[in-house]
Image 1 (cartoon, helix red, strand yellow):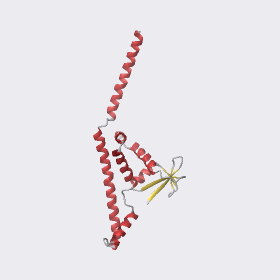
Image 2 (cartoon, rainbow, N blue to C red):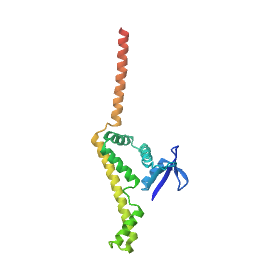
Image 3 (cartoon, helix red, strand yellow):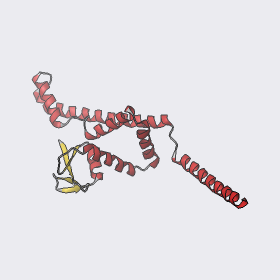
Image 4 (spheres, one colour):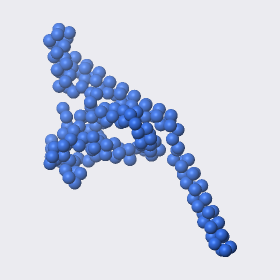
Length: 191
């Protein structure tokens, strides 16, 4: 079942099922719990799911304990640009939306179809549904792990500069600026 949230013009998210406002942290928790989430504009009904999940993704990046990792992930997504990073991003978002997960209703439909074909006994229907849902959950977990591994491999492949390296370079640039300013001052004084 899809969990529908409404987004108002002031960017506030509202959960009509529980009649209360929802934070991006709560959206993140829903996604992590494997819930299929859909966010619609409160007035037009337009689907804003991708936009809000992107905001949620950025919000969760801020919470990562390793700032370097957050920075590296964003750099890879920006630097790769083309299809490969978009494929990674699409897989991540689709996995978050539950597109790779089988809902209970869909699992029941599949099992009912197998019962009609005689491939599954109707006495084992409930067990078959549970087994199918478990396999779908394992598959989703596997996909998420694969996406995570792909991101890590892309970061390592790009050999992106570390935060410490950038700080050292900034310090050297600052020193050069001071030296150039001193030299400019001396040149003005000697004229």
